[in-house]
Image (cartoon, rainbow, N blue to C red; front, side, top):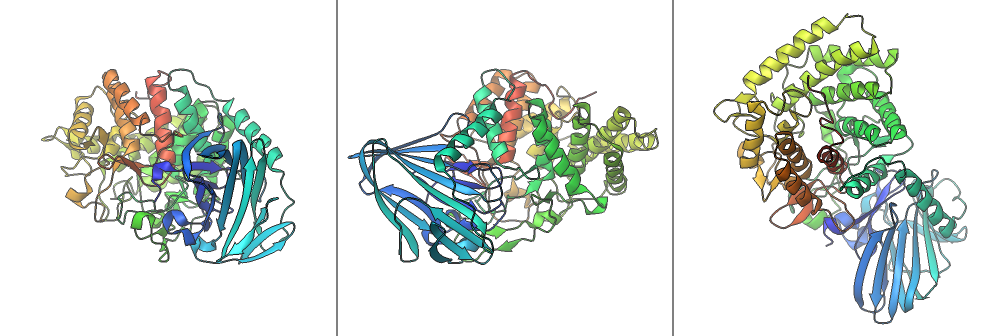
Length: 597
């Protein structure tokens, strides 16, 4: 089984693929990020679908890299007879996504094999395969794929195979294109032209990046990942490319992250505006407003890439799971949870986007007033919290803090856009102050000297590292410092941060443990810097950067015992945290998510 960190990421900004270190595509959903997978061996077996190239002779060495600042993967395979380069990419274009693979001869002559297993509906459905339209078509239900290549292919045991030789200087293209099965396939793509266009697309996009300093390249690569996880037609950003990569190997903490979380939306929007990507920020803001439009009581914490609300969770029993981590889940039941913090994050984003030049119009303001009216009568209720627990609602301290953020930024926005005429401000100010007093009284554990996970609890929660960043209390407040130091003492494992201790409180209602949470580890770096421990912050940041794979990719979690990445991959929230932390340490911004009074 390939380790999570041994995968490379491809994207056409509508869907994406994972490619193993030796050049096998083990995960691909078409035509969208959240569509059924046609290659699902990542979560099962070879028979569940993959696309592999490999030499006939023994492999002596494999190396890989991304071409410059593009999601164009180059994998070099060396054997005793020569060397080849496998060039993999997905051109950002149109409604018919392509995966293009070019086998280039570098030295000598190499006998190559191709193995293509297409299985729709997450590795279950065997397609009907035929030769047509100058290619090989695989059709089942609504989906169809066509493979076009000058190489002769043949069928063998429900698998498409081919054998061919590549000499130095030769380039052999393979183009796999999705189309709706009731339509004719699109015209053939010239692989070399598509390669040039794809390289130009990413080069142009990267050229807009604005940042200097020692971590510029790390930040840019993370931004490229975020762009690759963006669904271009709507501007929505999926949390990760995958579903059900486990938070504990062999455990049940396996979730579908191919959807758009409001929390990710808000933080991403603000970051994009600050690093030169205003168009993306504007598109993302539009997705956010469309997704939450309607009754405030029906606002969800996550949506589909087009703003879909129904994300029903189900299990896929025919997949054995990554390293036997079951169940494999599709959909996410957390979409129906009540999480107070999203109100704070949405209002934070609306305020930040307004002061950055994306002005709030009357329609936008009316929607936000509806959200605040709902929050006025519901902020005192318990919720499932930022970590989407399944063990019952509680009065989570982070949730109440973010409710305070909602009222605080609503007041600031009302004054900034001059759309309120003080109709709501006075009432919101009273609620804001009441929440602040309550959190300081009920969320702070005096014996522990720290804010705790929920009211009356002794448990710590790394989400409270957000407190100085959103302006709830300044970093030099002794209660904030006490919380930071307590998290360092109790939630650190091998220099990294756990979200909380699920095995002690059983707050999430699930068995087992999980790895250290990489976004929280970046948040601690920020806090260390805020309280004057900049040398410690930089040392921890460099340690986190060292956890990236050879292509600078990160998942959600890290197992400090097994020394491997865990969770869905690549993870938007992690890469977003990396970007913001680098900018803070670089002096580009002090409080990226808020402006303390």
